[in-house]
Length: 523
Image 1 (cartoon, helix red, strand yellow):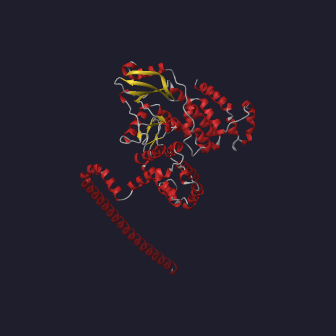
Image 2 (image 1 turned 90 degrees about the vertical axis):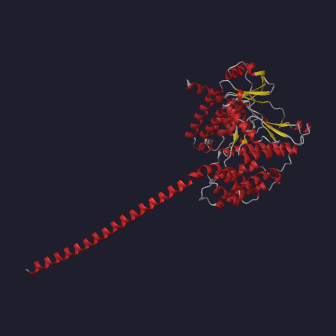
Image 3 (image 1 turned 135 degrees about the vertical axis):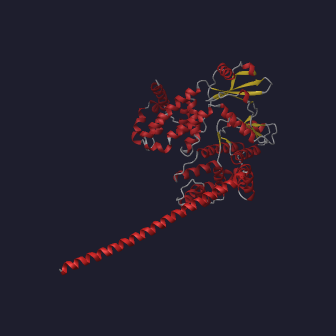
């Protein structure tokens, strides 16, 4: 039965791919060029006279294939190290414009999850969805105490749909890797696994709620970013209840200006918020498309961002943070040797890599960027070029850094829409340098000592015993070594004596044998 399901789904996929002439894109590559004549067998090749660019056709095909393929396209768009620029940019435009499912179904799901009638939990519930995406949709409601909230509800049978499409995608990835050698460069099985992991994570809305709570704590005292409160008592794995927010969509520039919002300050705050998340908290919102960001106009001169939808977040290790901070500063100082040395120090490059070669490769892609005015230089493009150079030297870029680069491109694009003359480096460098100052010097040393003091105080009473055990073990090892040396010396002495006795025996035997021969000759 599973085979037939795959077959019918595959037939539909092929029909959609033919409709958008995706076969022309695939067979037009140099790997399949000898098979290019098959393109002429596709009826749509002759019907569609004015063909769209290849990236736009791929995006439209994914939108037609359905919500799971849209989500897959969004995830793949983050892999700028594997995709051509035009396709990656176009895929980043994919939006979850999915028709909502009936409100009665949402009501049933909520009642089953909470084990009560919907009006026992909420005083009001709007049956019409506020917004609808590929995984879930959102309904407005009110709690019994009058708090205005939204309820996010997973789509019915969404896991089965995801299982079906992931199974098919993995089958296609295996076929591609088996029969198309060059497909290994794009790592299709790894990409499908990454898509599956992201989708299955988004199926547990409690994970999204936990991400929101963490981000809310990180910015609890901030006037730059507001994160809505999660109501855990009403939240389950398939429903999430959070505070309803009101603000101006970030992409509505005209409305922002009409409300008197200081757009220059808004753009600067956006950059500052992002780099604060990356370097101070090592926890950043990684799904920063315009539909997830709003602006409060309560204080237009000091505008506040409001974030929603926390299904995808990123986190960096201390090593990753240091790599980014020092690399960015070295890049803007055009110290390419330092950039190359940092790659080796961070363990990203093999120690045997020639620094001069890597330095030259970085210089060749960076110098054209720095020919632009400083305010036009893109952090995201800078990281992208760095990743492209790194790939040539066989470095496996970590997924969290690819996610960071995608988020950085998003926030840069939004900031420049709001304030085209924004100098990104002037807004970001204070946060980066502030973080670096905290990581080096005597203060940083004593701060780390203070942070580890509870653990040290717990282990301190055991220190004399540990020292005694170490000394005892060291003495035991020394005695064993001396005993082994004594035995070895004794054996060596015995060997020398045995060798001396054998020489004497051989000498006496020789003398005896010579005497015997002389006696025989005399007789």
